[in-house]
Length: 130
Image (cartoon, rainbow, N blue to C red):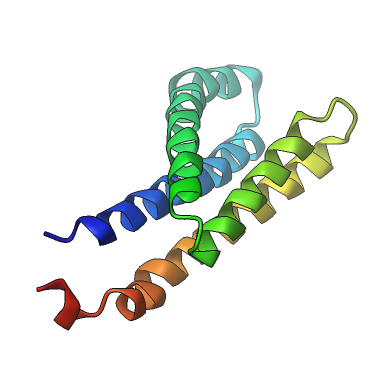
């Protein structure tokens, strides 16, 4: 079985879910024009996604520590820790928070896309898997 590749795929999938969720929540926050729509989207969409993203984030960070020799996972972990630290700061403008979330989301989606489209085939060629 391809259990070695599945660990990497799961780690990248978790990071991809976190990045996509961050982008989606940022877009929802900007797209909602009135308070009722914002509250409805926040309660039924953003809040469940945030809880699921937190669970995926913990799994991704644990897996990236287990698979520490793989450099893109280390970059994703560092980017995640830095983004959470900036967002958790008490002082900062809304523009800073939104720009950090967008940069984090785009960076994570780009890095996980790099894994699934290019790097995965280099590290686990078809002849080795069978």
